[in-house]
Amino acid sequence: MSALEELLAHPGLWRGRGAGLPAAVPTRPSGFAQLDRALRGGWPRGQLTELIGAPFGSGETRMLVPVLAACTRERRRVMLVAPPATPWIPGWRQLGVDPEQVFVIRAASEDDIIWSCEQILRHPETGVLLAWLQGSRSAPLRRLRLAAGAGDACAFLYRPPAVAPQPSPAHLRIRWQADGDRLRLEVIKFTGGPIPAGQPVVIPRDVR
Image (cartoon, rainbow, N blue to C red; front, side):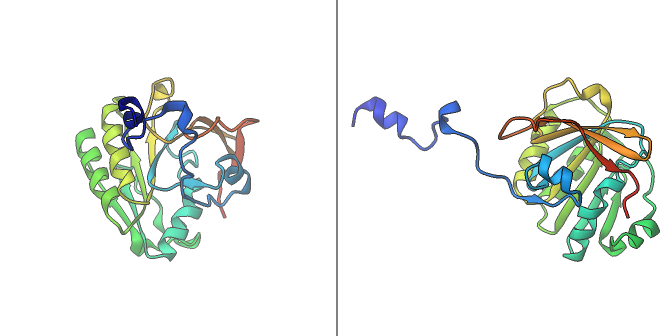
């Protein structure tokens, strides 16, 4: 074997496009058939998902209730970091979310939020992380991507609309917008394949 062939055979060599698409990412069903089809299975596990939009309280959290309920049925923790307001837990209970598995963490700064998220994502009992980020820096997201890869939780980062044009290490980026009694979801980044084509996915804001 020549020196070049030996180098090309090294397992640490990145082969770029010639290596093909990465392995399929495990998912959790979203609870919405149309959204699961667009996401090729559901919400990614062990990866970051950015949910980009405003204002808070437009149903952007309610659309995650099916996956929250599924995790609490498995006795997996639902962790909320720096939410703008305290969720209405009695309403979540009526929708199947066990409040004993829901934890809210207050954080005073973006650095505290990132640190908390890192610890949560690495913990094996975490089923879902919801975190609200107001900063525009991408470097902390790379840290969160590594932490997410150490577990299999669904990690959702709520971010403001201004960050949509910026590059991001997140596996999935979705822009959401309230549209009457519905939410309009547009996939703007999908790692491992082309962005799902077609019209934006529209789902009800009031999940029952």
